[in-house]
Image (tube, rainbow, N blue to C red; front, side, top):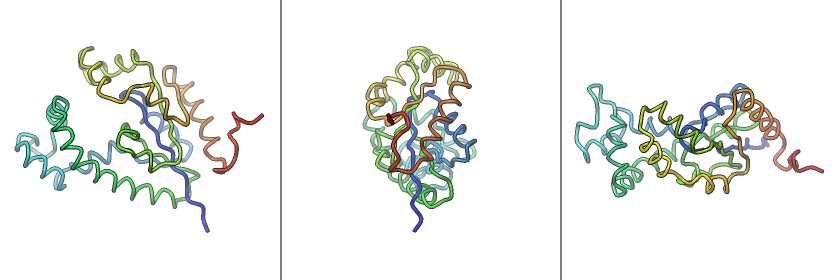
Length: 212
């Protein structure tokens, strides 16, 4: 009987480099599913979740092509916890089901392991879907600079976005492994290669770093 492939959960705060790290693992032949991409899929044109959102907030939430105006919706739910909880109640179960389907396929594939990349790995209990948790860690000042450059927001807006996420230390406290992404790409690739070698070991093999 084939042993199911283990799944590594990859998470981190905004602008920590989760997708960059996942792409580096992919260079080692590792498949991955991105919870953010799945979250976009469940509110795509024709999806029931999008219809529910439009019914609640009106047709101005979609553009001329019928696509959700995500920034408009983000502004609504970011300012109102009740609206955020409502949105999560209709999207999170759908996202979770699609992730479970993707991970089931991955577990029975040919790769030595797979990745679930999710910014809400801990907040939505997606950690229960994985065997090990990898946190991509970045100092807050680096996050703020990256968010400002990427999203063209003010420094106060960037800090507000960070404040709405799980605190950095709380995230690190739940990590099995950590990648520090405050250096150059060479350093990042080296850390990924090191973890790739560890993750290819059998589940019951001792970690090399812990071996005498």
